[in-house]
Length: 306
Ligand code: SF4
Image 1 (tube, rainbow, N blue to C red):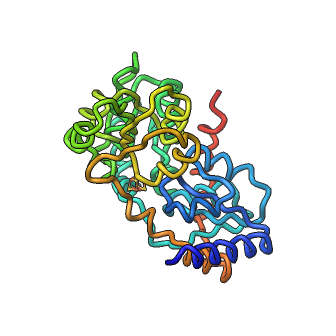
Image 2: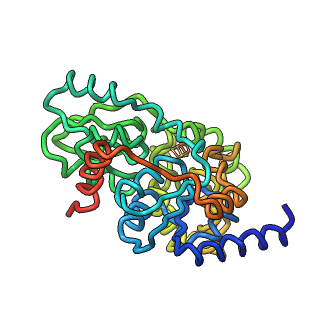
């Protein structure tokens, strides 16, 4: 699409947004042109808080479907739209409700901590939810000595290393985008930029997080780079994050591993689909009420964590 066509479509979306009194929320991994029409761009924790507090009657959620489900779970009376219901998350698909029940039966004393990247019907079976920004705090404050952490084994293992007095049972799930970030894919770039600091997301494999200069959630990576005195960074997370990083730290050199980590599910949200969603008020996100009530309890326990 030409730049002028992109701008035209963006303006049409913004007009519709005003007309419908909608708020547009977008995840960091969205396409840059989609991030640019959002009222708020953030990671899962920030977006959950925003979805819970926004006074707008309509929320258009630009992200994968479990994220739009969270908005609906926390704001059941609002219309929540997803521009494309086919935008799923491969990591979320790695934990099924019947598997959680089996795991609970195997470890009856354990609490279930579910990463936000899960379906609502899985959140409904969890004791508490966490995001990559607060996973350690949630695990630490969860009562009891045994925790089943699902579904991302890398994130769970990263925090379990520094947790005392907790036995963490790891699920065997992973995000294929972050799993594809390897020491080799980082070294390929570092050979040409030996001065660059390596900052990575905790969903990356252990051998990557162990060697990184900084490990943090998407927002923590953005903040670290913006506040750092260093000038050059190899960023080990999904490429869309660089759009906000470049805005917040325009003087920094931002590099990606080779090959570039891209989430094709996130990229299924296009401006055309956002426009259609607002114009036709599709696709409405619904969560069955019994599941919603249980999932909301688990999410609110996280949001209210002191
Ligand atoms: S980056 Fe990974 S965890 Fe995030 S939506 Fe894509 S597949 Fe799911």
